[in-house]
Image (cartoon, rainbow, N blue to C red; front, side, top):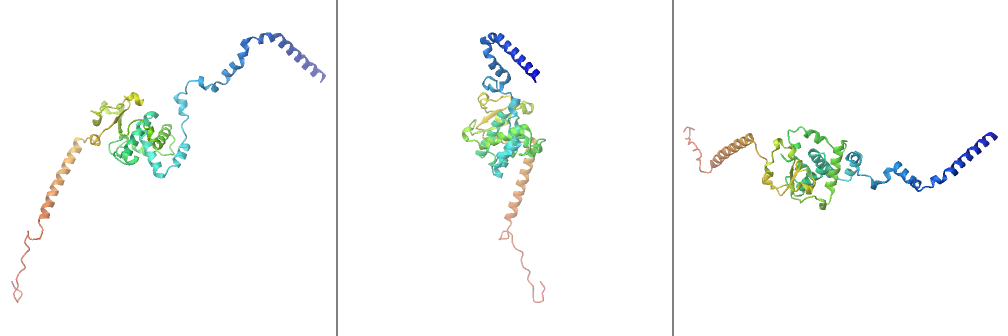
Length: 279
């Protein structure tokens, strides 16, 4: 114990001597900033204002989980839940970018609220030749219809969250006028062609909407008559043949109706019989 006490006393003495010797050096002004430099090195996350915004990959991790989305859906009625799922399927089929999905969702909502080709999200989305991914036959249709609140894909969770936001949003959040009910994606059109309804229409300013005009163009005030599906030659021939059969059958029916037993066609004369039952 006495030896241990002697060693300790020696160490303390050496340390005190070093401190006294180097004390003038550590009093230099530059060393007063050492604690601040240590904080900058060890705790960079606390200086949020000095850091750049998080990259998209880091933001993606902030997406809600499937459980979070099911909880939000749980506050809706079963019919409302089904409507949100149809909206999410539609915007998921059109793009994987959040901003584009949000604009497409508002187009669909505009159609529902103005009763353009349907008064529910389901009817609007499944309307013939309106949203190509849902046309029959389509290689994507089966997969889209299988998506629900239990699906775990990151892009799907993003679409479902946006669908919930737009479905429940105030009308004041609408990014364009309610008559904006059409869009198309130039990069997805075969041969770079333009839809017939957009040939003489002017798209909304892409810069104002924050979209790439090569990816999406949005249109307002397109009449329903201008948006009628274009028939192929075979469809036109089929329609012509069906129309001819209808006219022929109508003519035959009119002739049959004119032949009533009300005097126009004489009734047969009842034969006269004598007492013996002979004519």
